[in-house]
Length: 158
Image (cartoon, rainbow, N blue to C red; front, top):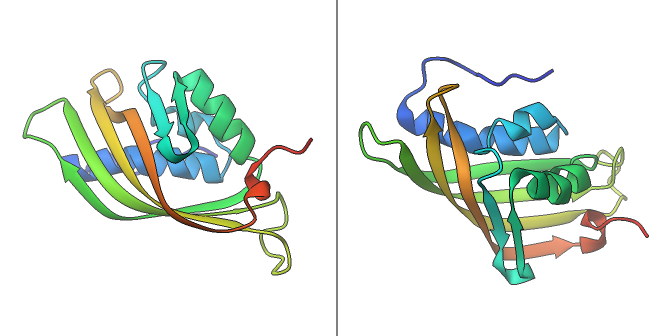
C-alpha cells in the first residue's frame, strides 16, 4: 500500500528530504505510485556519470531504475542530508549519502546469495509542486564513491 504523505505538517527541510525518501522507498518496495510521486513529471533527469548514464524523463527513469531494480530485494539507506532552500522559494537542492544493497528477488535473507552494495553521494535539485503540495525531484545525480560485491545482481538476465 502506498503512503504518499507521511504527514501534512512537515518543515520545508523535511518535506524536501521526503522527496528522496519517497523515491527510494518506492524503489525498494517496487511501488510505482510512491516512486512517481517523487518526480517532477517528465521534466526530470537522473545521471550516474561514472557509468556514462543520463536518463531523461520519468518514463526513462522508471524503465531503467524502477522496472529493473524494483523487483530485486533492495534497501537504500539515506544519511547526511543537507538541504539548501530560501524561505518561500519553490526551488531547492540537497546532498545526501546513500548506501544501497541489492540482492536477487526473494534472496535477500539468504546469507549465501550474491549481493551488490553501492555507496554514493546524491546531488538533487527539486521544485515545489503547488498542485499537490509536494516537493519533486528535477535533477538527480549519483556520484558513486565505492562498490562491493557482484554487480551482475543489478543487471538484467540474458
